[in-house]
Structures are given as C-alpha cells and as structure tokens.
Length: 400
Image 1 (cartoon, helix red, strand yellow):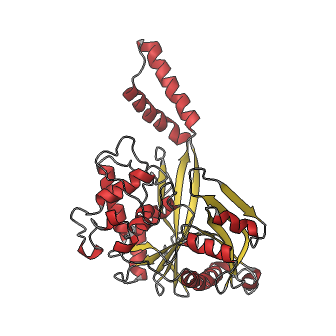
Image 2: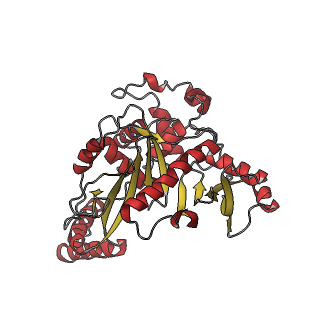
Image 3: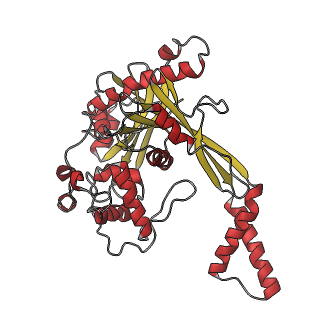
C-alpha cells in the first residue's frame, strides 16, 4: 500500500475527529455505475469488508479508501455509431445533420452504448495523520488527488489544506545533490534520474540502473538540464523516486522493514509498518529541503503580481478575489488549469484555488471537469486576462 505519495498539510483550524470523518464519508459511499452512468466515485471500507467502517484507525493513523469506476467506451466505437445515425438521417430525410445535431447524435449514441460498455475500477489509499496534520494520497495523478480532496473539503466542516511546500524546491535541491555528489543526511541517491532542458528544445536525458556520481551528469546540469526526478533511499529502509513537484513515486519498503513483519500480518500490520516508516521519512525529507514554508507573498511572487495581491488575511472568501486576473493569466499562459498549479505558483490554499477555477469556468476561461476530473483551457478565451509569469519561472520554462 501507499506506493505514490502526494502530501498535504492540514490547517490548524480543523480539529481531528474520527467520528466526524466517518460521518462525512458515509454521505458519499461508492456505488457501481448505473446502466447509462459514465462514471462513479465514492468511499469504500478500507479493510474490504462489506458494511465495514469507511475510516479505520490503526496505531492512531487514519486510513481510508476512495474507489472510482468508469465505463470504457472507445472513441472509434462511439464515432462509428454516430456515423451510422447520421447516415440513416441522410438516407431517410435526404439531408446531412448539422454540427449541433451531430453533437446531439453523439449524446444519443453514448446512451445507447453505455449499458454494453465494460467498466474499469480503480482505488486510492488515503492516509491522514492527525498528530502530524498531514494528508497523504496514494496517487501520481494530481487530477485524481484533487477529486479526493474536494470530497473531503466538501464533507468536513472547517477542513482546509494545502500541498506541502518547502524552503528549497525539490528540483533545486536535486540539482545541488547531483552536482556536489552529496546527498542529505540519512538519504542516499540511487541509480535512476531524469534531466530535462528548460529551453525550447525540451531535451531529456534519462539514466536507469546507472551510477549518477559521474561528470556527465554534472555537465548536463551545468548546461541547463534540470532534474525532474531522482531515485533515493532513506535510512536503508525505504526507496522512492522524488519528483520536481515534491511527489514521491515507486515507494517501497526494503528488506530490513519487511523482514520485521511476522508472516502475513494482514491489514493492521501493513498499515502500522507503512505509516510508521513514512511518518519518519516525510519530516526527514522536508528538513532536507530546508524546512516547510517559503518566503512571504511579496517575495515569492513577481513584482507585477505581488503588487496587486492582497495578503491572505485580508481576503474575503465571499467577495471578489483580488488575484483572480493574475490566476487566470497564469492558467491561460501555461495551459495548466488545475488546483495544484494555482496552489504552488500563487502560494494559496486549496479552497481558494478551487474557487478561482470555478470562477474561470463560469467566465468561459476553462472547461468544466471531464470524467477524469481534468479541465482544459478554452480556445480564444485570453481576452481581458492579464498574462503574468509564475514565481521561479523564466521565459520558456515548463511549470510544475
């Protein structure tokens, strides 16, 4: 369990209450897709037992499980059915369907095919540490993480959180470690990394099962190729791949950890061992990155953005957001209409970023969420939006 980690910090204003969490999850239980339902999502008992609790506490670590199910409807099959319907109209009525009618035909075809479509299920572990006030999601997809966080924020009164941020960015730290060939205390660098150029070439160099303490790696970094991921090991107990976005991928407990488990200890043992190790690794990694939290808004943002941004303390959730234009400009400029992108580059909380995206949807800047929870920037919607640079990015850089 827990092989890909996206880490959030829970606001101090929320008081952990397991019964309240259970009650909130019970309002959104998972149910399989209906005949014409394209997608379904909700909470399931983490032990896999029917009618079991939706939030389990093991060694005072809370574990939940979020399930999704989607109907698999290949585009080629759908298009073929639409063409059949269009051909029937042309043959019987002597006319070709227009653009709007074709859209209606596509909706009809989808309803016809959904009852026959195969389904695909996916599940995500959700770990909440009430003492450390961290929420950890077992996914490498920020869109899926946003869906789970939205469910929790909507269900739990006063629940607020933000992605963990550090004084030194993960990318800058990885570049330093590879250049100096010195890993932080308690960590070692393994034999895998990816370096990517920030210029228009977007050149990529990957090393797999290869020593990284070589001059070639240092030369690539000196020439502008920055690390996007590096494989590491913590305390000879846990291996993982650190990404530029401060996510952990391919997390694995090493033999010294797994050998301590007596046989098949079941759910409780897996949770206790996994969360026990990760609850030590996460703060150690944050410390290796200079500690939590970056500088204030005025220093973290470009002058053009900071000058017009009001401190969070003066922001009224029910009123117009003073940084909406800047947020919309970032989204339009970098084509990144996601909550996590706004959080990282504007240093704001989840709730505020979500409200900004909702307003962009209403004003036609971004699309509504699709079946996978993703949005897209709508074409030709940049008018009246102020394009600004994101903090720490230069022209041509790819935001992360």
